[in-house]
Amino acid sequence: MSGILIALFLRIVGPTWGIQTYALCILAGIVVATLLTGWRLRQRGVDAGYVIDIAVWAVLLGIVAARVFHVATHPDDYFGPGRDPMTALYIWEGGIAIFGALIGGAIGVWIGCRQTGVRFTTFADALAPGLLLAQAFGRLGNWFNHELFGQPTALPWGLEIEATNPAFPIGLPADTLFHPTFAYEIVWNVLGAALLLWLDRKRDVQWGRLVALYLIWYGIGRSVFETIRVDPTELLLGIRVNVWMAFLAIAVGIVVWVVQTRRHPGLEPSPWQPGREPESDRAVDSDVYTDLPESRTQDDVEITAAQPAAATK
Image 1 (tube, rainbow, N blue to C red):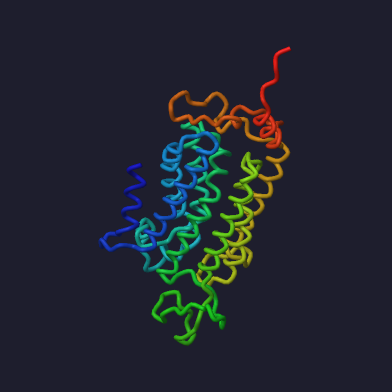
Image 2: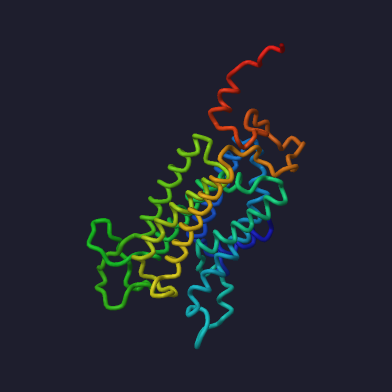
């Protein structure tokens, strides 16, 4: 936990002790995602405190991987003539990538679940809606920084960017308006979170299928928004690396959905890994959703719970 606090502290205040609004938005997103995930875990019979144990790994590795991915996709900003390679470590100066955070965060969640005994797919599905909300908060920080905006537009909601902005395209008039791509993504992510929460009310989108829908939804939106952004990035076969990553997210989501639907057509038997259910007071009674065979459907569960026990013959 200390590593996370130090990283967030440096990202928020920086070496000049100035408050970084973007970092505060990221921190707010982490808090919202943690609270929502904890509430959703409790609905499955897991004490909300477990989310902190797992978040320690997820946030720490997410921050490291987000920075590494950004540096790898923007090498000219840190390496080459006149560049100081050490600036690649200056995370307080900005520069993190969501796709890197997703990769590192997923590894962190896996490690945290191995340590706590919570089933990985249970936690991932509980996290999916909150993750979209956290990303929406992060994009709000882009508005404060006037960064990651889109191409010029004549639409009435176009964003005015100061001509002194390092990302302002050379040769354009100072009063040029730009697509607020970060605002588009905020709306897309909030709608996605609402959709996932609505779908999960059926309680049959388990075994990692909800996080698969997250990957598909986010990948579709990001593949569109990324194509109209003006910030420089590496190209692969003429296409931005982040667009390829969005396509990969969609593909992974589809594969996870198909494979998990075929392997696990029913509900998760327990939110715990086999043999790892705790006996302490941190295990919440989840009633009919504990130790169900995979073949049982949600309708079977509700009918069984509503019927009185049969008399012994």
